Image 1: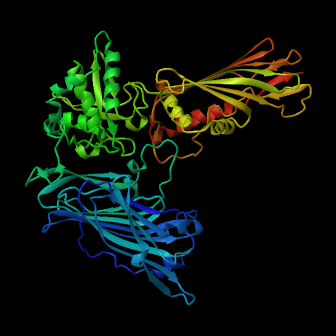
Image 2 (image 1 turned 120 degrees about the vertical axis):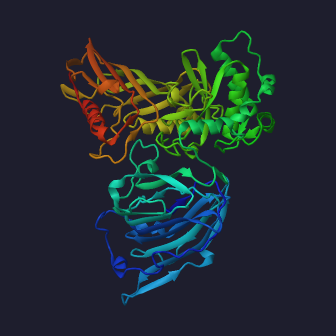
Image 3 (image 1 turned 30 degrees about the horizontal axis):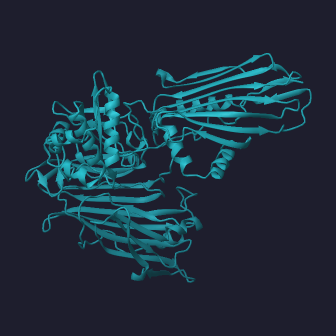
Length: 633
């Protein structure tokens, strides 16, 4: 079932406040009810006719208030799923003044309103410390217009949260009106301003933004967080005349200020100032190399601590108490790791990051709230290593891809600095090798050996451990559908140091009764390298999690009765500045065909303007996989 989702990633308590809507509830244009197809996107299943938001500071309660009012038109059967509204938010948030109706035309062409009954509103708690309100709209059919409004309230006195004009369906009109408090000034950031129809002249009191005819945001391959690229406006405090700290809020003018606030914050940097007790918890380290010591200290923390599935920056307990509690948030587990590394004599510091699901960090805006996770940075002479003690399945020196989101801020007494989060050199690595034997009728059989390392091995181990033997066999049969995979053997499944090894025994019957001339595609395993970029135009950057490396090496053994007449031409493709390469080499040796394919992508982020060169690269790779060997019987 499809829902209209609205998520609030806020950390404050919400209350209720009544505010008049700027667009009158219930004033529906009959022409919208008669609409059959949205002219700007004829394939759309629904269109958001109106998305209005009003945020303002209330002098009486010293809180930021927000009013949301939206209308959605259902255009076809697929759009009927939008007859469900879901509001998801943390337990501490409250939503009030919820109002919802459905509008249809009767047989006489008159508008009929059906109001949502309270019994169609469902509240529930989820296991991840969140609550949700779900609304089931009655009498929703193709042609209906759905309308709803609600209000939220936060005790934060200066923070205005982003407004997203663009959605996963087209938006005809989106508008956001903000009234600023008199004691604060703001930096404003607009994303995708090409869709903006109107922005009021800047001033310190109010601001209005109107965007029209926005296309739907559609997922594309290799996108980090779509919210980073949706048309939106966000606000960050740059100065205040009344106070520095308001409720849960803290703001600073630059990264030096962020660094200073973190270092001297009692719930962050000050937790690392009293760590002598941590020395008693260290395992025996005599005679070990530095990397062996680091690995053992990390293992000690992981054995003691269990992640409670929450994360952030605030270290709520002194580290000794966190250790005794055993089940704690991610930031406390990794701060324990940093403290123990320091007591063992290492130069270890925290790095605050924004995870990939939260969005890209913005070095241009010095604001603490964009970070939601802490990892450890350890200097080892001229080298350094990034560590996390939360994701246990990852070996020391290998970060989960969720945490590798471009850059993180190293918090340091001398000066803060940005750290490349791919510092460890995480990669996706796969090596395929085989010896394939053909008989006189050109039936074939062989064993494909797959070696996987780095991030790929971690992800594949997790997958294989969660499947039965029958499910694993079926998975590889589907993955290599051109072959008849007869058996699967897995080695090093539980190792964190050895490459994951998978052996697939396979066979394939000849596709036809061949005559004297045989044309054979030497790429037996089909589509060894997929082309994920078929669209001629790209609306978001290409964002790979980590660099990629892939190699195929195999030999095709032909019977004596079959001779090699012609082979495909070798190919070598290079992206500029060593960003990537593709090498396809094929050679004949007596009655054998030796194939080598090497592919790597070192660069992980390509802008929209760079997309054409990346697409052309993969198009040429794909075309090379069509060339045939000419054999003679």
